[in-house]
Length: 336
Image (cartoon, rainbow, N blue to C red):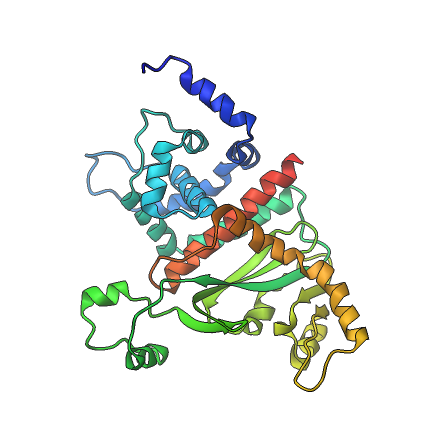
């Protein structure tokens, strides 16, 4: 079948009838605010002016946002950019445009890691949110989510060495490059997990992620609690689940002029009183808003699996997912 001159336009119109969320995202976000920070990647001198020029940094950044929103591998990202008209339109590409391949996408993400840019870009967009009137208000909610990594098939001796911070000496170089020695095991609700944790703090009013940290999965939620708190929030109220509760934590929060609203947990031989259960129900109505964040991330992209090697790369992937959530959330709130 021969394509007509306006067939692509007609197809895009059909896509728009069903509501393309990427159109709203492009309309809401001023992508140029990220260019000054991203440009550091291109500051290294080229050895020669021969050959093709590198892809635009904002274009590459938007590709990583797409990848994060839809939880795509590098190969799948390359394929979908070529295959999906909505992706091409979001990126400002045409059917005759040059498309970055999977290796180029991987290298750009490596550059972000090398320059430590993801947290900087995250903080830059948070400042942009404040400028647009989305201040951190009505307190903050802290929680953590386990991010799976491919499970390692190591011997008990190898796992013991890794846990002690050593790499088995008999591993050849090619094996070392393929082994994630930073991820760890943990157990939650009787289920064993392997990977990392995404610790976040959101504001209770707008449900934007205002701060985050990435650790291996074995780190207890409470160990990074205070580091996540946002002193600029208009309210001193702090909500969290029972994993964060201890007398020491509550006393420390109160000494910092915060008002803790932390869930209580029954202990062996001591059930919660009706008053304590009612307090949990009251706190849960606000605390549950943080579940919306993890739910939205999973609804669009599915369960995130970090397929990279090492904590540095995992922080880039998880940080991009938090930033992508904020970008998507902003596009919805700003168009409401």
